[in-house]
Image (cartoon, rainbow, N blue to C red; front, side, top):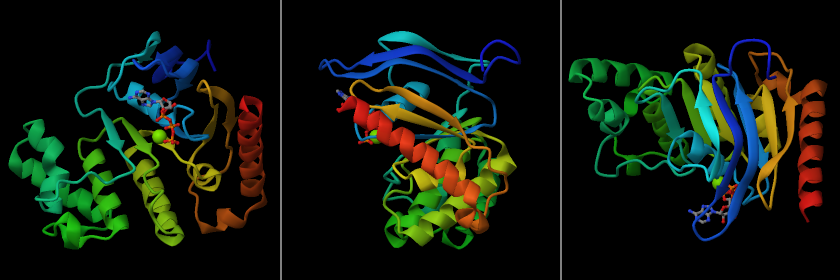
Length: 256
Ligand SMILES: Nc1ncnc2c1ncn2[C@@H]1O[C@H](COP(=O)(O)OP(=O)(O)OP(=O)(O)O)[C@@H](O)[C@H]1O
Ligand SMILES: [Mg+2]
């Protein structure tokens, strides 16, 4: 991965994080992410998955090591979707999704046009005027994804975004997310507890080991895109899920 070829889009080199209370959350995380990749990050609870995303988002600084970019991300260059939809309850969906553009002082007409297009893409065209409380969990998540993508980020970070949704809604959102990824060509880092979800989405799985958090395995997922329902019963999908599950079990056993 290192050496030949263009510099990776994003690179973590020996990233170690000790939180102020003494918890060693990450140790020696080295990870090179190529432009346009879709990474799934899996690992036991507490192994530092969210901490990795927070570092990449620039929300926390590493205790040791460094994070470098082939080109520093501009404002709005990194989008983040949290497990909770985190919408403003007093604002309608259109205003929620437009917020990052308002903060960036994008002219209202242009911002509104972008919000309208994106709401249509995430299937919320008819809910622009609705308030978050009027939406289902899946719809709120769609709105959160629209808000994260409205600045056209080059990198989209997602922290277990669909964990609270039922299976069918989750699968639909997986398909819609892949369609957005193929169209907008952002790079994606997707944290999930579901091996099946991670393998369905990603072209590479990062398996983490806990205590302290570190990378245990980096598994390429050479399944073709576009991916659809047929993949779920494909033997190659089953084999990839098995490889990631085994690595995950191994990571947890070794840490025990
Ligand atoms: N702000 C903080 N201060 C102190 N310790 C923290 C802080 N945030 C996280 N930790 C600790 O760092 C470790 C990694 O936490 P992190 O939230 O990154 O794990 P995770 O892999 O995302 O877990 P989960 O799957 O449960 O979301 C845990 O031991 C956690 O208790
Ligand atoms: Mg987490």
